[in-house]
Length: 124
Image (cartoon, rainbow, N blue to C red; front, side, top):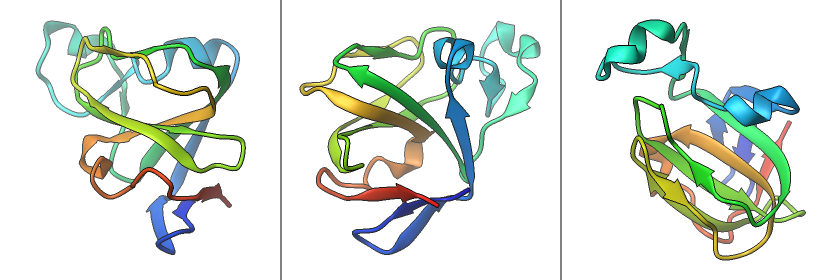
């Protein structure tokens, strides 16, 4: 599956990782990009520029990057998959979005300026 920015007609990621149940709790913690922290040897998966993690978690709860070893871009989407809020998080940060959301997605930190509030995204 792919994540596409329909507003800009651009493919964002070619590997969509759907997070549900227990997977929604651990999110990106088992992934790594660089070896910056001592606990990196515990992480066995790579998360790259072509990956996106999608969470269907309705609400207004916060998102954190505790125990992660790399920065990420987080985008909050409404039920129509339009971006309503976004943030770049460094390791060990927490963010509470301004509005309620239906989905949030986590991408490589380089995407923070490429996707704008109001853009419509789609998973195909």
